[in-house]
Structure formats: structure tokens, C-alpha cells
Image (cartoon, rainbow, N blue to C red; front, side):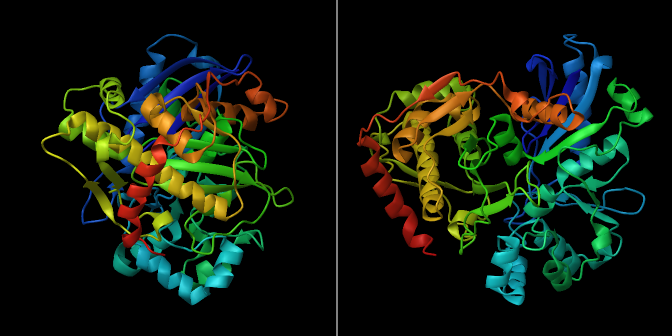
Length: 493
């Protein structure tokens, strides 16, 4: 059986086709070639058009077919990974009512804070494991409060991956994992949260049918199959948010195992069997892909909004025309510590680990007679690594101290400067794998379709291609202290 995996990212759509028998990726494609736009109707807002996602999914699938590396008729299951925490609302005819309010949109912070106070901090944290914060439920609450005419027409509210599956199959479904990332789920009661639905005045009929992550979420309709060059009736057998999916793709499924990513946003994601709560809701706990009411598997997620987006911004503004590989080479020409240049990467909306504050991206220590663009390249990557250290210290406060971290050899982990800075400043070895979200989604589809006897079997060929260990050198520590001194006065929690 061949498996099709779709990774709905913020910047692009990537698809891969994987042979279930060998776990080999036969072909991959991305669309578009340039990064997808994020609309900013007001400061702190961030929206994307779900119709754009669908068009890009279709284009990416056609592009991977064009490689002629496999028989599209042999694809037997589809998996979907998607950008987390977004809100897509549909009317009774299945039409999208407004652009999606995506993960890095900050407009619902106060809406979520009001819900937290009304529900009660202790009860919310004990039952939801999070503040309603800036998550999907609060975004839906914002629409209800500020766009009542739109809200009155809502028939279904869903996450981005739920929408792509709906376009493929005509069936609206979701999962406990998806509902937990939206802060709709009560972990104590293992059901939709009565507190959240009562406070916001939501009707539970807005929520699609709840199915397991690894389960059938509908079958490809004839019209869509014809459009995509696939067989009608192929099932969608897996849907998960990008960070749980990234963990799955790295075979991070057991308590104590930890994954990291450094794409548009940066994430450390650790698995636990405890209902872990950070009292300040700086890190967040969601149902992992293998969560079951009687076998608790939860993902504790540290998210840094301003990560690869800073690297991209610096490339566009001062490195126009350079590839990321060239930027990495220039960054490596500058000594550790960037000769005094310090950069805060927090310019992409409210940062949860900073108490939903928006300190903005900042540059300090720039000497116009000394520093070059190479210093900015290195200081950006060091600043991102320092943000990971700051967040990892929060995870350690909450009892999660990883001995190893697994990451895909992609995005910022392709840079030796960033990878070395990450390993040295955190003190944690990193195992790097050749994987990506679309391959993980394909393997997830295989698990859901029964192509593998166990979850572990789906990753029996998964081995690291590189292992990076800290050397014990202290060169980064002084730079980190100076970076921290720049940050802390603005984010005292």
C-alpha cells in the first residue's frame, strides 16, 4: 500500500508518498515555491484564506504525481498534518464564512483571559490543563462577540486539518487531540468542556463528530478524486496538529521522549502520562496522537512564535538574493556571541511562554563601524537558540528535563551555527533525522489504515543521521546572560 501525507504549513503545503512496506518516501513536493502570505488586517492579527490552502494542496498533489515515481492508483490511505490552533468556520452549505484566524493571531488574548477569570483559574487549569488564552475556543468567542452576524451563520467550527479533510471527503470530523489544542476538552471528565461551552454560549452542535486520530475521517469523493488523480473512496485515516505529528514522525510516543522543531515557529514537545499544568500557562498540555482515556499520553508543548520567521525576515531585509545555505555560511564566519550583537526574536504575535506579551523583535549592541550582515545572521540564530533555552528552563520547572531531543534535519537545524548554539546553551544532545511532517502524516495514515501491526512498526526503519552532543564549552553562557538581561525587564510574569 502507498500512503499520501499532507502537511498544511503556514508557509507552504508539502506532500509525500510513502511505501508502507519499506517506509521509504518515494516522492515529495511543495507548493508554492515562495512562502504563502499571511494577511494582517490589524496589528497583532494574522489570517489566511482556507481556499488558498485547498488550492495549494491540490497543486502540491499534482506536482508530486508529475514526478511519476509511483502509481497514484496504489495510494490506499491519506494522512493530514496541519498548523495548530487555527479557526475555520463553515455555514450549513459548507462554505467558509471568514478567513481563518491562525495560530499566531493575538486578537483573542483578552477574550481568553476573561474566560479564565470567569471559569476560575484553578478549575480551568485542572480541567483544561491550560488557560483558554489565545486558542481556538477564544478565537471563536471573539467572532461571537465582534462579528455576531457571521457567528449567527456558523454551522461547524473546526481546525485547519479538519477543513482539508472535509474538502476531500464531505465529512466533518475532529478528534480529542484537535479539541484539546483548541481548549474545548475537559481532561478530568474526558468530554467537551461544559465550562467553556457555558461561558462562551457555544452550542456543542458546532463541533464535528469526534473520532480517534488514527481512524477513518471520511473517504475521497468522486469529484475530488478526479481532480487529484486519485481513486474514489480512498480513506483519510489520520489527522493531527503539526507538532503532535512532528513528534509522531520522530517516533516520540512514550513518556519522557522529546521532539523539537525550528520552522516558522519553534517548538519543544515532550510526551508525558501525567496531567501536567504550568500555573502561568506558559507551556501547554494537549492530548497526544495516541491519547486514550484509559492510557494517558499527553504532549507538553513549548511554542516560540518568533523563530524561522526572524531568520526569513533577516534574509529578506539584509540578505536579499542569498540562499539560506549562504546565510548559514556567513553566520559561521562570525565568532560565538556575534561580537556583542543581541537579537530578541519575538516579533510574531503574543508569545505564550512570555505570558502572552508582545515584546517585539529587537536588536541591541549594533556597532555601525564594526558589524556586518554576517553578525546579524549569526545573532538571529543565536537569539532563537537562546529563546529555546529560556523555554526549556520553563519546562524544567514543570518537571520535564529531557536527556535527548529528537529533531528533523530541516529548517534551522540545517544550520550548524543554530544547531551548535541550541545544543551548547541547552546542554541537551540532539539526534537529527531525515523526516518531515508530510512523511509523518503518511505513516500516521498507515497506522490508521492498519498497514502496521503497531505504532512502533511504522518507524522500525527510523534512525538518526546525525547526533550532536554538547562539548561543555561555556562560550555561549555570557552571551545568553546578556540576551536574558535584554528580555527580562519586559516580561516579568
